[in-house]
Amino acid sequence: MENFDKQQIDEKVRKGFPFKDRRHNNFHLEMPFGLINDPNGLTYLDGTWHIFFQWNPLGVVHKNKCWAYTSTKDFITYSVPQLAMHPTDVHDKDGCYSGCGLAEDGKVRVLYTCNSKDEKNVRTAAQRFGTLENGKIRKDSIIVPGNPEGYTAHFRDPYIFYKHGKRYFVLGAQRADETGCALLYEETSDGWNFKGEIKTDYKNFGYMWECPGLLQFGNYDAMIFCPQGLEAEEFKYQNKFQAGYIAGHLSPDSLDFIHGKFEEIDKGFEFYAPQAFNNSGRHILIGWMGMPDRDDDFPAESDGWRFSLTMPRELTLKQGHIFSKPARELKKLRQDFFAVDAAETPETSFELFEGSESKIKIRFGKAKKITLTLDYAGEKVLMTYDKTEQVMTIDRNQMKSGGKGVRKFKLFADEEFDFRLFVDKTAIELFLQHGEEVASFFVFPEKDVVPQLKISGDATVEKISGKVWKLGKFNYV
Ligand code: FRU
Image 1: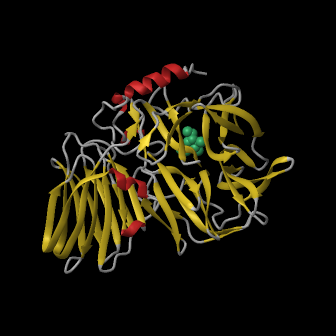
Image 2: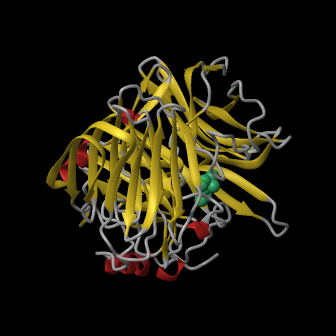
Image 3: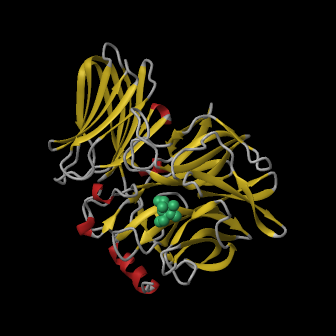
């Protein structure tokens, strides 16, 4: 096990703020060094949002999985992140893997996966509680020491939820036949008991499901999970691994989940392992802006940091579909703005700000295709909506460094095309059609320039109207 000196690491983090590398983002959670992945332990308690995430403080590779911790009351001002938990014993020596958070007796508690490998590299995954005390997680008891029969040790990422007055957790798993699934545990007076596998229509859907979550929207349930090993299709599953959901009704007693089809929750390039807070019916989701096995798409190794978290998003479920909008708190980032107002024109273009939000609607008129071009002194990202095909395409092939490629997905727009585009230094989030779809991705322009946004049609566009705001930065105190 590596030596993790919390005091030293926390001090080094403190010195890393404000960020020095120009590629660091202004309104995306990041660390000055190390590699971050999944958001963990998201908990709302008495006016504070507690946020943990996977972090390797010792390098920019997927190793030494620790939990980092920050908190915020408004999603704008955050506590300087610190090391909350690191491998300490035989149970979690190979990683404090992902888990959830909950408020209990006025405290923030967490439930996480202890990952351990023996001399023969045989893995054991145990589920353990912890309690947040002064920025550090005190490790409590292990409630599930290993995987049940019929499943492999790929058994991780517990997420607690409440239904009909009882407590349950779902957990990502792999069957002995190497297909993915989600398992359900129920709290009883004898402890946490294995109820069984959640029965969905997806019986052979990837080799492992990671990071499940169970969200309740009134009487409807949505199970978020991340299946690994799906084949890419023309308009789907184009990342290495997927993050999506099924929505419907889960009966914890029969384990039946009656649901609609699996939908990806973000259609961009860098989005995985999301988790949601639940506070009085508000579901606020944060995703990892990154992708397993795609480290080289992020050319920041030399600067000693890698990956970000998405902005917090508020989810709603309408007709079986999850809509995502930037958390309303983020409006407080807005500073100066200018209006965009063009009519009967094939194109309009303007310079954005160093960090910006563009909220724009377009009436097609004669145009059947609309392209949003983000232009960084000649390096370009093209975001094109084709109304005839009802297809959205995001093309990063004109960027020189970082991940490239194209993502394509179906999107419905009738007379109007609506978008909210958040452009941070390297992190971009595009919300489409009032949040019906979202796409998150990075760009790494060679030059430190403020991008231009060009909106163009393949014929005269009837109207382009909206606003562009300069956005401020997150504060770390
Ligand atoms: C998802 C994941 C989780 C695991 C964690 C380890 O990105 O693989 O399944 O708990 O990362 O960092």
